[in-house]
Length: 348
Image 1: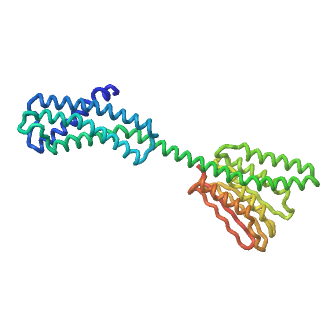
Image 2: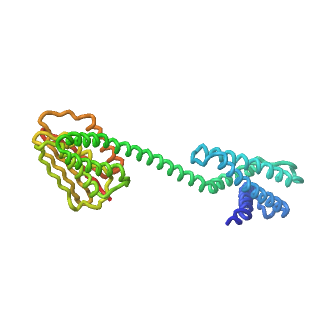
Image 3: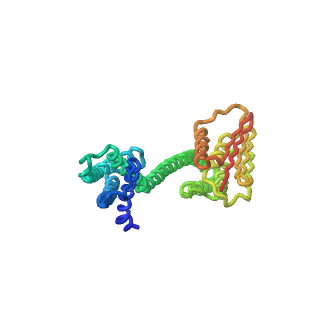
C-alpha cells in the first residue's frame, strides 16, 4: 500500500489532472487530443506526471510542516490556513511548469507564444480542485483524530470538574456528622463511660466507611448498615419520648447505589423531629426502583430551617442531578405536624 501511494499514485494523480484538462479544453474548442501530433501529447503527459510526483511530495511535506508548527486542533481557521498554503504552493507549481510548457508547444503555430485565457483558467482551476480534494482525503484522518481528541479532552475536563464538585458536596456532610457524633460522646462521658466507648466504636465504623470506601458505587446493603449504625448513634442523644420505626426491605442487598445519598434525609429528620416525636424510616425495593422515605413529626409552631439544613438538602439535590440525571425523584412535603421526604432511585 505504501509503495502504491509513493510510486504509482502520484503518476495516476498527474494523469487524472491531464485528462480532465484535455477533456474540458477539447470539448470547448471541438478538438480530439488523440488526433494531435504524438510528441505533443507525450510531452504534456510527461510534464503532468512529473507535476503529480512533485505535487504529492510537496503536499506531504506541507502536512508534516502543519503538524510540527501547529498543534492538531480541529478548527475552521486551521483548515482554511492549511488550504491557503497548499493551494498557493500548488498554483506556483502548475504555473511554473504548465504555462511555459503550453507556450513552448505552440511554437510554430499561427500565433507563436499565444496562450488563451481559457487555457490559463484550465491550467489553474483543475489542478487546484484536485489539490483540494486530495487535501480533504489525506487530512480527513488527521482531523478526525483531532476531533476525537478534542471530545475526549472535553469529556475529561467535564468529568474532572464533576468529580471535584461531587467530592466537595460529599465532604460537606462530614462537619454535621462529626459535630453531632462528638457532641453525643461528650455528654456520655460523664454519665455512661461504657456507653461512650460503644459510641466511639460505632463512630469509628461510620467514619471508616466515609473515609476509606472509595468505590463509585456500593451495594445498597452497605448503605443500610451504615444508616443503621448512624441511627443507633443518634438514638443515644435523642429524647426518651422518641417513637421510632425503622423498616428495611430484605430484598435490598446487592443493588448498586452511590454512597451517602440517604444520610442527609435521616440526619435532617433527627434534627427537626418534635411534636409527639414520631420518626419512621423505610427503604424498599419496588420493581426497578429503590424507594427511601423518612417521615417525622414536627413541632406545632413554625421552626425556622437552619442554614446548614438548607445546605444539606441542596447538596443532596445537586448530587442526585449529577449522579442520577433523569433517574431519580425527591419529594418533600410538610404540613402542620408532619414532614415527609421520599427519594426514589432507578438502579442498573
